Image (cartoon, rainbow, N blue to C red; front, side, top):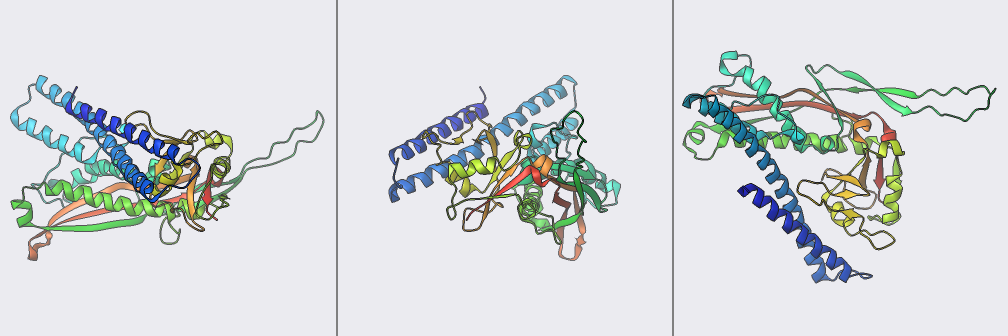
Amino acid sequence: MSGTHIAIKRAFEARRKNQDALQALYVEAEGRDLTAEEQGKEDAIVAELRDLSEREIELVDLSEKEARAAEYFAASASAGVGEGQREENEKRHLGEVLKGIALGEERQARIELRDDVALVAGTATDGAELVETELSRSLVDFLQEGVGALQANARVIMTSSGNPITVPTVASHSTVALEGETDTIARSAPQFGTVQLDAYKYAVLVQASRELLEDSAFPFVPFVIEQATDEISRLISAQLTTGSGTGQPQGIDLATTNTATSAAVGAWTADELVDVYHGIVSRYRSNAVWMLNDSTVQAFRKLKDGDGQYLWQPGMAAGVPDMLFGKRVVTDNDVMALGTGNESVIFGDLRRAYTVRIVGGMDVARSDDFAFDTDLVTWRFVARADGALVDENAVVIGSNA
């Protein structure tokens, strides 16, 4: 067993141990509020569970990448590659490790991470073709891993240009009636509308001195790529969840009018969550997911049904998601936390309910000439995206009283 597999096993065992401790704490406090000391223990256990879950995901990803790397280098060795080609292979593998593989799917192209040229858009010999194709596709994968709506399986439309596009929306479905043998069959057509998807631009310039690049032992270029992409992902994720629709995407939260409301201020009971669950029809529930703020997840872990059984179903194996009413939970801190009047719960089949448009992947370019007078190297990151609700019947918003 490899070191990574041992680490996965230990993290999983530690998570189960913490889950048992948390359940024991709640059982001990049955029928009363937690004391201040118990509340402190609960907070510590929940924080540890969150860290362990994140660690498990990282280790599972690393294990997959190690396996792919072993296969790749074994194939290279059998083919008798030379030392120069082997170095190129290692560079490509480094790019894979940095960007990851979205949802376990195969990569479209290997990454050749180069820092020996000025990546200037429009100059093919300087690496522009590398940036605009292979690296761009990999960064789209990274974007998908960091955006809550995409983790919840919202439909994605990839376009090569940013011209506005129109997509149909569903307002209502046909009403079917039971008719007699000679009755006139009633007419009932589904009602459609349209929504325009634009291409809002998210961009940043990152600069570094040449001394930092040449003298630092820290792998600065991979760090620049990862942190810039992560920050763009954060902003896109926030606006796909809560965007106003004016000058920015139409967020899932603000666009949805199908709602259920809790009776208590800033809280949910198990029965009220059942109402949220049934706020969409069964054909949408089969692929539905929950989108919740992390603080809401913490509160929902304590909910029980009428028999005293916890509603929360922790993942029973490494990499397996937690469940609520048998449906996957996506943690998205752009969803409102529990609070008076807050829309703190999103539940639905996001693949049918919400469409995300991404234009041409993410463009990344490097220039050694942009800040020539200050001897700074400049990277430019640009992503264009939009999102809109297309079927309100497929999602319900839970709002606190």
